[in-house]
Image (cartoon, rainbow over all chains, first blue to last red; front, side, top):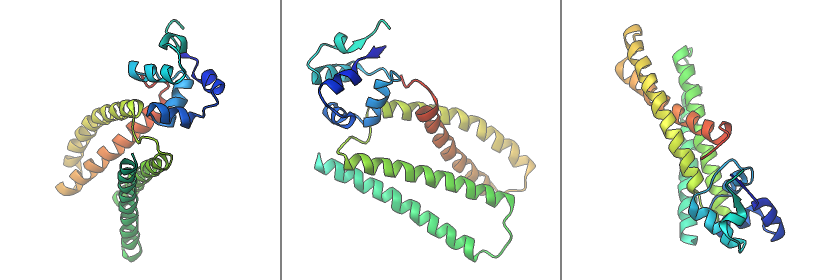
Length: 64
Length: 140
């Protein structure tokens, strides 16, 4: 699974810590997500998509 | 939230104080112990340094997260902890088998063997955690 978190974070001028704080996880979880080394739970994926004002499938790509 | 991070900081400070107390009491023993150290004592020192170092590392991480107002654990850290614990459990099974075998071969007292086993379990947990956190590529 790949995602667009890094790109969307840059678009909204958010640091990794800012995003981590908004979705209630540790900063290193965001680091691992951006490196595609961690697949988030449905709730975390939903929370991240919500922060960027998008749908889950627009942020996370299950195909690749 | 403020109350929660105060709790986290208190826990982390307690871990640091405990680690420092261990180091100080151990150094005291080291300085005033006039006997030559044997291999068993050197191994115990190495194990103690590893465990205390690991505890300090975790405590500083907690303090840093509390300072930044971030949670000290989340779904990924819990997953790593779970996997690290499972790895430590498997390692411990083999280690206790080794300890049982060694008990016949050495003249160590029972409490020394149990102490070594407990220390070994702590090291197995630290190694399991480090492996899943830093070496394994995926954290799913």
